Image 1 (cartoon, rainbow, N blue to C red):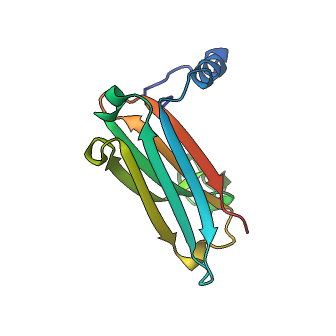
Image 2: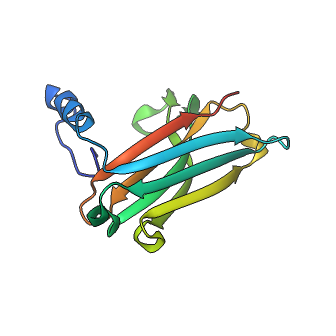
Length: 146
C-alpha cells in the first residue's frame, strides 16, 4: 500500500520515486500530536485534526495507531521454521475512524495509555484519510520516550 492505494513494484526504483513525489505534495490537513506522561505512569495522547480545504472535510477520517518496535518471534512451523523474525511498527492498538465531517472539520481527542506502555520501544501515529479514494491528507508520528 502507498498513500492508501495498492502499489505493485515496490522492489523497483519506482517505489522510491513515488515516495519522493508523495512527500512533495502539500498537506491537505493540519494535524497536531503530543504526548504527556502522567504521575500514574500512564501517557496522555492529544491529537487534533482539521482539513485545510472545506471540500476535503466531507470524506475525511482520522485514525490513531499505537505501535511497538523491536519485537521478535520464534517460528516453529512453515517456510520460516527455526528462524527468529524481527518486527518493527507492529500496531498494538488501533483507534478510529473518527469522522471530521461530523465535527465541522475539526477533531480532538485525549487518550490515556496504560502504564505497561511506559518505557517500551513504541510510539503513536495518526493520519487523516479520504474514505472515498484512500488519499492520505496528512500523517504524523511520535515515539514514546523511555
